[in-house]
Amino acid sequence: MNAVVLALHGLLVEGTVETVEPVLAGCLVAAQPRLVLDVSQVTVCDTAGAALLVRVAELAWQRGGELRLAAPSPAIRSWSQVAAGMDRIAAFGTVEGAVEADPRDLLTGAGAAGQGAPAPAACVDEPAYPQRRRPRWRVNPSARGRSRRGPASPRR
Image (cartoon, rainbow, N blue to C red; front, side, top):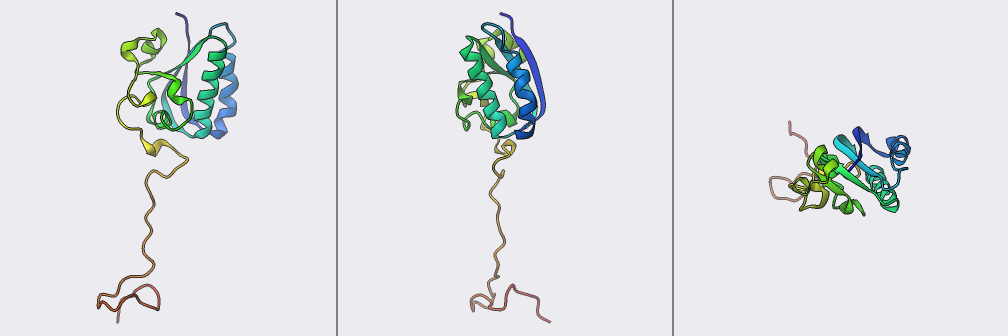
């Protein structure tokens, strides 16, 4: 089966989606289009990037074809369970597996995430880890409660 293979590199974010979307839509003009996106080199993906992939997949399905992802990077995998519609896009471990739609190369389990848990650090819309703030007041070691003058300072 013939497929158009494109490799995406770098950022798939709100600022780059406007440039990439017409190119991807142009690849879907044929009847029953098959588009394989090598997304192994996508370093950052935000909600706009995930929404772009879902829109392109829906456009391909409307035209009787499909979109397949090849070797999704952690940036793409982080959206597989979060973004609506991403779980319906087939993801394969290699470009060759995606072109041939090889069921042995199909990533299963956590949607397009494939093996392991999604990496939250690649998702730029949320902090990777909850930010901890230092307490404003230090507890007085003499067990008298908190200082009323502000943060504790060394005594002279």
